[in-house]
Length: 88
Image 1 (cartoon, rainbow, N blue to C red):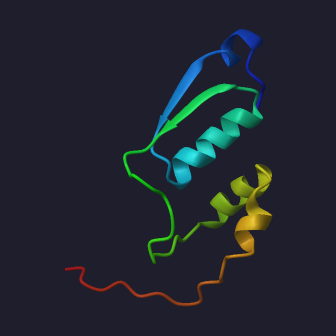
Image 2: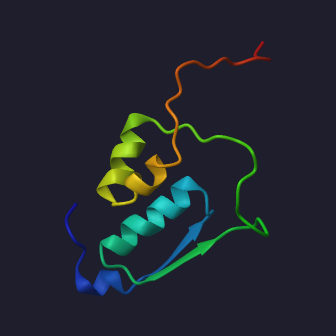
Protein backbone atom coordinates (compact mmCIF):
# COMPACT_ATOMS: atom_id res chain seq x y z
CA UNK A 1 0.00 0.00 0.00
CA UNK A 2 1.36 3.44 -0.93
CA UNK A 3 1.41 5.91 1.94
CA UNK A 4 -1.02 8.80 1.46
CA UNK A 5 0.30 12.38 1.22
CA UNK A 6 0.66 14.30 4.49
CA UNK A 7 -2.32 16.55 3.62
CA UNK A 8 -4.58 13.49 3.35
CA UNK A 9 -3.40 12.06 6.68
CA UNK A 10 -4.97 15.00 8.51
CA UNK A 11 -8.49 14.00 7.40
CA UNK A 12 -11.05 13.26 10.11
CA UNK A 13 -12.06 9.64 9.57
CA UNK A 14 -15.26 8.18 11.04
CA UNK A 15 -15.74 4.41 11.11
CA UNK A 16 -19.19 3.09 11.92
CA UNK A 17 -19.06 -0.17 13.88
CA UNK A 18 -16.50 -1.56 16.31
CA UNK A 19 -16.69 -5.12 15.02
CA UNK A 20 -13.81 -7.00 13.41
CA UNK A 21 -14.09 -5.00 10.20
CA UNK A 22 -14.33 -1.58 11.81
CA UNK A 23 -11.49 -2.12 14.27
CA UNK A 24 -9.28 -3.69 11.60
CA UNK A 25 -9.97 -0.72 9.33
CA UNK A 26 -9.09 1.73 12.12
CA UNK A 27 -5.86 -0.13 12.89
CA UNK A 28 -4.83 -0.27 9.23
CA UNK A 29 -5.46 3.47 8.80
CA UNK A 30 -3.54 4.29 11.99
CA UNK A 31 -0.58 2.21 10.81
CA UNK A 32 -0.60 4.23 7.58
CA UNK A 33 -0.20 7.44 9.55
CA UNK A 34 -3.77 8.71 9.85
CA UNK A 35 -4.27 10.28 13.28
CA UNK A 36 -7.83 11.61 13.53
CA UNK A 37 -9.74 8.30 13.50
CA UNK A 38 -13.03 7.88 15.38
CA UNK A 39 -14.82 4.54 15.73
CA UNK A 40 -18.53 4.70 16.59
CA UNK A 41 -20.51 1.78 18.00
CA UNK A 42 -24.13 1.61 19.20
CA UNK A 43 -23.56 -1.29 21.61
CA UNK A 44 -23.21 -0.01 25.16
CA UNK A 45 -20.32 -2.38 25.93
CA UNK A 46 -18.17 -4.77 23.96
CA UNK A 47 -17.11 -8.18 25.16
CA UNK A 48 -17.61 -11.90 24.91
CA UNK A 49 -21.15 -12.99 24.04
CA UNK A 50 -20.56 -16.73 23.84
CA UNK A 51 -20.36 -16.80 20.07
CA UNK A 52 -17.39 -17.66 17.91
CA UNK A 53 -15.91 -15.71 15.05
CA UNK A 54 -14.73 -17.67 12.06
CA UNK A 55 -11.89 -16.01 10.14
CA UNK A 56 -11.00 -16.92 6.59
CA UNK A 57 -7.30 -17.46 5.84
CA UNK A 58 -7.08 -14.12 4.04
CA UNK A 59 -8.31 -12.30 7.18
CA UNK A 60 -5.72 -13.99 9.37
CA UNK A 61 -3.03 -12.89 6.88
CA UNK A 62 -4.29 -9.30 7.07
CA UNK A 63 -4.28 -9.39 10.87
CA UNK A 64 -0.74 -10.81 10.76
CA UNK A 65 0.37 -8.00 8.43
CA UNK A 66 -1.09 -5.52 10.96
CA UNK A 67 0.89 -7.18 13.75
CA UNK A 68 -2.02 -8.44 15.87
CA UNK A 69 -2.50 -12.05 14.75
CA UNK A 70 -0.13 -13.63 17.31
CA UNK A 71 -2.26 -12.33 20.22
CA UNK A 72 -5.51 -13.42 18.54
CA UNK A 73 -4.04 -16.83 17.68
CA UNK A 74 -3.45 -17.53 21.39
CA UNK A 75 -7.25 -17.66 21.84
CA UNK A 76 -8.00 -19.37 18.51
CA UNK A 77 -8.98 -22.95 17.85
CA UNK A 78 -8.88 -24.81 14.55
CA UNK A 79 -12.37 -25.58 13.27
CA UNK A 80 -12.40 -29.13 11.96
CA UNK A 81 -16.11 -29.51 11.25
CA UNK A 82 -19.21 -27.36 11.12
CA UNK A 83 -22.88 -27.75 10.31
CA UNK A 84 -25.60 -25.31 9.40
CA UNK A 85 -29.14 -26.06 10.53
CA UNK A 86 -32.45 -24.47 9.74
CA UNK A 87 -31.77 -23.50 6.13
CA UNK A 88 -34.68 -24.20 3.84
